[in-house]
Amino acid sequence: MRKNRKLMSLAVFFFFVGNLAAFLPYQEAYWQEVHRDVPYVPSPYEVVEEMLRLAQPKPGDILYDLGCGDGRIVVEAARRGIKAVGIDIDPERIAESWENARQAGVTNLVEFRQGDLFKADIHDASIVTLYLLTYVNLKLRPKLLSELKPGTRVVSHNYAMDTWRPDQTTTVVVNDSVHTVYFWIIPANLTGIWTWTMPLKDRKIDCRLEVDQHFQYFQGKLFVGRDTVVIDETKLEGPKVNFTALLANRDQKMNLNFSGQVEGDRITGTIIVKANNNEEKIPWRASRDPKTKRPLDAGEES
Ligand SMILES: C[S@@+](CC[C@H](N)C(=O)[O-])C[C@H]1O[C@@H](n2cnc3c(N)ncnc32)[C@H](O)[C@@H]1O
Picture 1 (cartoon, rainbow, N blue to C red):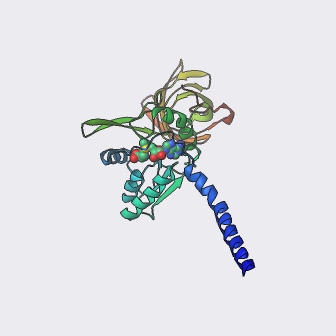
Picture 2 (spheres, helix red, strand yellow; picture 1 turned 30 degrees about the vertical axis):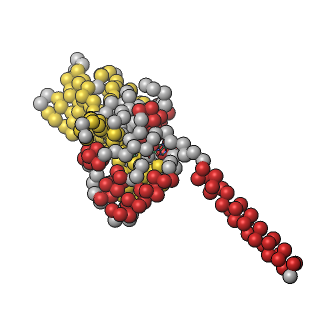
Picture 3 (tube, rainbow, N blue to C red; picture 1 turned 180 degrees about the vertical axis):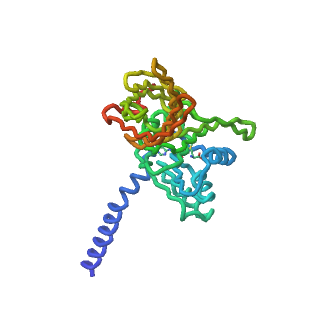
């Protein structure tokens, strides 16, 4: 009888020790301080509305809210019929987000991931929303510009991106306080040296374009055969590039109007050549020496 009781106590002891060992890592994780780069403050719904109005979600879009809080931006995007992903470092926020998505009946369109926004895989986003702080936005800027597809819309509540000027800025007044909403379109990276040949008057002329870029703004020097021209009316919107060049020498005066689509190290588009009251449309296929490409944001403040 005494032997049985002893065996029983040993079994109870090992049962608890075993369970405690399994439980300890969770306890530790629970008590570990969650490292937030930004405290939790939800965007008022009026601001969420304005952020989505600027982003213009349409079928096929995928929205990422980096630091999603209670998931309200993600849920509102899903209510508009698009897929949306929320990332937050705080497990409590993630649980709250799932509950809010469940109540809104949109769990089929959303995903919430607990983790660090700086380490998140965001390459498939076509809209990114932020309510962080300026220094956090600046730390994130190289990741946005190198990982997001050209044309991706980025919207930020109250905090800008320093020298990366927004494409649009609006304000919303909520309970007498003014909230600013910033909007950017991720530009294609055009930096470096592009070359192509251009058929002109039965000749094939070698062309070279050397580009300097500052976010969505660029300038360049164009070499057409032996002539050098500075390009004008430059415009870059996501992957779409446009510029003009006036070629004037002893033999000819010609207006060149370039428009194309940038895809990695290739541009495909058209050149409209205007000379002597004639207009001709020719294909434009340029390629870049990849070695000449530079990052749009090297990380240090530019
Ligand atoms: C100001 S709240 C914004 C919440 C939501 N986006 C909104 O606009 O209502 C910032 C959120 O970022 C989260 N956060 C802070 N640092 C983070 C990090 N490094 N990675 C992921 N989330 C983070 C916080 O937990 C918080 O929920």
